[in-house]
Length: 158
Image (cartoon, rainbow, N blue to C red):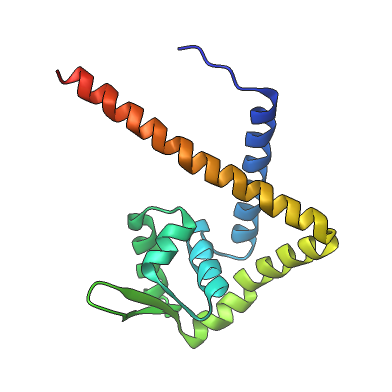
């Protein structure tokens, strides 16, 4: 199989990998697994609690990974689940969880805010607009990819 990554995509993938590595390193320095940090970060982004479904959707983690990390954090007294409807649950921080979040996820959020505050408003707006445009285009093109794959599988089954 032959493929070609453009210089732009190579650079983009490199930057994305390096950014992810920095977040991983910060999680380790703060004594948390990546999944635990992502869960705390997501809850902090929303407030003191967050719908379980939102954590899965916002984090990009699998349901199994989220559930495993939540069970571990529950055992450690960091968070608890509360019923929010027939099939919905909220993930809530305990007092110990709020304290841990202040010492970890909130620190990362403050670093990110400092970085954006050091940029011009024009640069921040342009960065967010371009990132959103990339996301929307990727979502749309991924639908086409899935449709083509579905047709391909359908033709193979004939």
